[in-house]
Each structure stands twice: as C-alpha cells, then as structure tokens.
Image 1 (tube, rainbow, N blue to C red):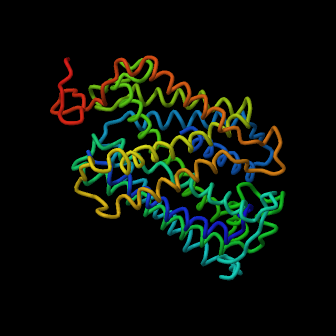
Image 2: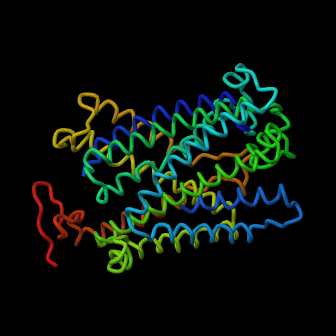
Image 3: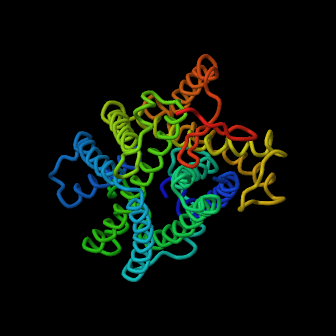
Length: 422
C-alpha cells in the first residue's frame, strides 16, 4: 500500500493474476508427462518478538539463526517419504484456506470503523519516492508478480504424480487460480480493515510489516497473535513446498549430468525413495546465500530479484519454443488450449519479458549506490557462464534429458527413446 495505496494493491493484484493465469495455461499445455521465503519468515518472527518483547535485540544475527532453524525443519520435512510429503502439502493448502477465511471473517467483524469502498478500490497514494504515479503502480505489479510465482513446482513433481499428463497441468492451473482468488479476498479484507492510512501504513512509527499494525489496531493483541500464527504457518509451508520443488530440479539436473557432484545428487534414499542428498544440498546452498543478508543487504536483495527473474525466464523459454520452432511439431497432451494456444503464448511471453525488465529496475528513490537494484549484474554473469559452459564443454556430451521408463534410465530424443547403458 505504501507505493500506490489500496487501489494500486487491489487492481495491481487483479492485473497480475490475469496475466499469470495465462502463463500458467501456456505452461500447463506444455507440461505433459527458498532462501527469500524462509528469511522473510525469520524477519516476520523477529518483528513479532519486537512487539511483545521490545527489550530483545533482534539483530541480523538473531534473524539468521531463526532462518537456519527454519531451513533445518524444511530439510527434515522434505527428507521423508513422498506420500507423507503429499499429505503435508494437502494439509498445508487447507490450513492456508482456513486461515484466510478466519482472518477475513473475524477481522471484518471486529474492526470498527471499516474503510469505505471508495478508499479500498479508488484511493491512490504515491509513497514510492518516485515522481511518476505510473511507475509507482508498476512497483505494486512487481510485488504481486513475486507473490504469484513458484507454481511450476507441479511440473517438477510430475514424475512422482499419478496420471501426470492431466494431473500436473491441472495442478499448475489450480495453484494459480486458487492463490489469485484467495489473495484478492485477503487483500480486499485487509484494505477494509485499514482505519488510519497515514498512521498505520505511511508513518515511520508503524509496526513493520504494516499488516501487523492494521491487525493490532483493528482486533487487539490477542486476535492479532492468532492471525499471525496463520500467516506464519502459511509462509512456513510455502518455503517447504519450494524446498520440495527445488530438490527435484537439482535431482533432475544431476541425472542429466549438469550439476557438480551429479553422481551423489542423483541418488534416492532406499527407504523414503526421496532425493535426500539433493534436499540437503538445497538447504546448504540456501544457508550460504542467506549469509549475504548479514554481510551486505544490497547484495542479498539483488539475489532475491535474480531468483524471480530466473523463474520468469524459465517460464518464458518453453513457451517461446512452443510458439516458434515447435509450433507445428508440438503434440498436445490431454489438456490443451486448442486454437488459442499460440495467441495466449504470445501474450504470456510479452508479459514475462515485461516483468523481467521490471525486476531489474530500481525500487527506491532517490536511487543511491546502497539501494540500487543490482540484479542485472549477477544475471548477466550467470547467463554468460552457463552459455560458455555449454558451448565449450556441455554440447560435447549432452544428448538430451534423461527420464526413468519402466525402471530404466532413457534419453529422450525427438522420435524415440534410446536406452542408456547401466
């Protein structure tokens, strides 16, 4: 709300949800067959500690310690059997839905006076520091797009999904649609609960994040704690799901021989049938990246932005290939867009390119060396290194992605399967 008021938050979410759903549809048609989240939760916990025990020094070192504890919990959770992970994820989904309904109903029932519809849907406030109202609105788009990401995890889990040709596409669509709808309801309710915009949102003395201040003023400390428990559980399980998806990506890359220590990372635990080593590899890397938060906050923010840019690019590449070189060769699965496939693909690609450009723009004004968005630098370095790695060495041995068919590893080629020895 600080960047563009209630109107910016609500309509920015609606616009972003619409285009994200189109992207999800394009990815779902193709789909046949952690650090920032956990550190954000650690900061959230530190903020709550400051409210109820202001004498406690919640320094960056304490926040990092909380962050490591959360990482370890996620490592343990994702090292168990695959079927238990499925049960936990389903329970997390319903807990999240229950939490949203509870906060909305109780919050709107107790908070008095509620804001007007005019405030919620038409009030615009440029608190971004930039003179352009249009750019301030784009910053809200940026925040919404960051939230509506990670829905590709269903594709990473397709090999562990029953009837994946239909299950994985629908999982992607349901993930985006459910989050878009529930997020809109939540944001509208929070906006109605804002009783003093300048004091609760704009003021430097407001509790951070400002949502806590809105809860505190509207429903009192006891209900605020109940609300925040639901919020923290939602963030926690979101981080756990991202750990699950990223471990499968590491496992798949290692199976293709594209990771350091691929032989070790490409193993399944004989008891749980899960890629436990890949899970803990992700935990260790996340912990190392998190150290940047202590060393240099600007560098850490650049890595967070880079993470989102990388996700957007990973969505863009298969969609572009689908509407260009594979336009006539692509064989649709059970779920497809029919004659609208190419049109939606072009719209999705344009939106992804637009948001990628937005994620490398400055987010604070006046722009200084300390708050500049440096995400483009590590992005260019990583892309240059990856391209060079493939051109110099990878192209000499990489022949295609490896899959498991009837218990054997095979290399997928354009027309048939060739069984890999061993």
